[in-house]
Length: 476
Image (cartoon, rainbow, N blue to C red; front, side, top):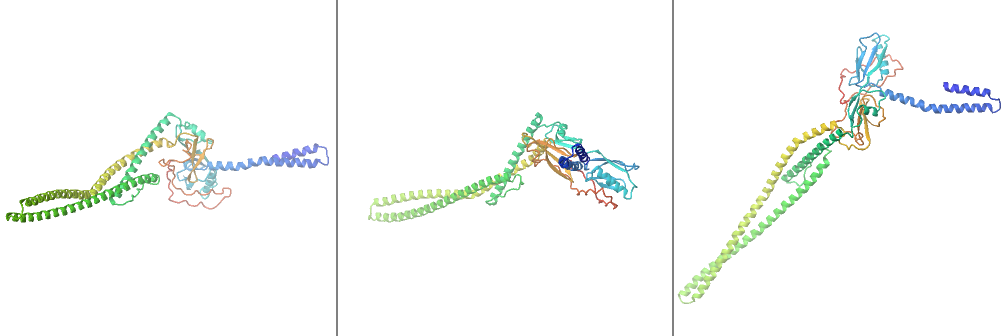
C-alpha cells in the first residue's frame, strides 16, 4: 500500500509541473490507473504463494514421535525441562499429565500449554516452547552407507544421499553382493519348483490310488498358483496316459484269456472225439479177430484196423499236448490279470513313498535357503531389480498417524523423520518385494484438531483416556 501511495504521489507531482491543458488531467489519471494495475498484477503471485509456503512449513514442523522439545515455564523449575514426544504422540507434563502434540507446531503447543496451565494451575503463566531435536532421517537402499542421519532444515534428497556416501549401484562390492544374492535367489526358485513338482506328483499318485480321474490342486498361495496349475496340468496328462495304458493292458489280457479258453474247449472236444474213435476201433478189432478165428475174414483187415487205432492214439496224444499247453497259457493269463492291478498299485505306493521323502527333504532345506535370501536382501534391499536405468527415489513420510509413500526427485525437500529409499528405475517406485519387510506403524487414534488459539476459551480441557500407554513405532 505504501508503494501504491508513493507511486500516486509521484504521478501527482509530475502533473503539477506539466503545463495545464485540456488533456492534462485525463492523461495523468490514465497513467495512475495503469501503474496500479501493473503493481497488482506483479504482487498477486507473490502474495498468493506466501500462504502456501507458510502452510508447508507448518506441516513440516508439526511435532511427531521422536521429536524433543524444551519447555520453559517462568518461575516453575520443576515443570521446565526437555520432553521427548512419545510413540503415541504425547508428552507428559507435571500437573496436567499427557498432552497429545501430534497436530501442534511449537507455537501451537506454547499457546495450548498457556491455556492448560492457566486453567486452574498457574496464574498468568509465561511459557516458551522450542524444538531441541528433530527426529532423524533414515536413508536405505542403494547407497554406500545406509543408516540414520540428523535432520537439517532445508535438507533435500541429494543432501541426504551425499551424507550416506552417494549411490552404490556401480561399486564392486554392490555387484558382488548382488551376484551372491542372485545365486541364492536362483537356488531358492529351483528348490521351490522342485518342491511344487513333488506336491503335484503326490496329488496325482493319490488320485490314481483313489481311482479318480481328476487331480486336486494343492493350495500354495496366490503368488505360486499359476506355477502349480501348470504342474498339475502336466501331471493330469501323465494320469490320463497311465490310466489309458492300464485299461488297454487289461483289455488285451482279457481278450487273450477268452481266446485261450476257446482253444482249451476245442482241444477238450477233439480229445473226447478221438477217445470215442479209439473205443470204436477197439470194438471193431475185437469183432474182426473173432471172424478171423472162424476164417471169415482176412488177417490184413485186422492189421488195418490196428493201424487206424494207432493213428487215432497218436492224434489223441497230440491233442492232449495242445490242451495241456492251452491250459498252461490260460493259467498264465489269469495270473497276469491278477497281477496287473497289484503291480500297478504297488508301483504307485513305491512312487508315493519316494515322493514323500523328497518333499520332507525339500521342506527341511527351503526355510534355510529362504532365510539366507532374506538376510542378503536386507543387506541390499533392491537386489531383486536390475541396477540399470535412472535413479528412482521413494520417500516414506509419517503424517497424521500413517505412513505415506511419495515419489521424489533429487531436489525434493525432506521432512524430519522421512525414510528415504534409493534404487534404480522400477525399484523404489514399485514398492518392496514380497519378501522384503515393509514399514508399518501401530494403529493410533486420530489426532485432535488444532484449537483456534486466537480466541481464548474458558472451558476445561477434556480428560484424556486413562488407558493410553506408549507403544513402540516399528522401523521408524
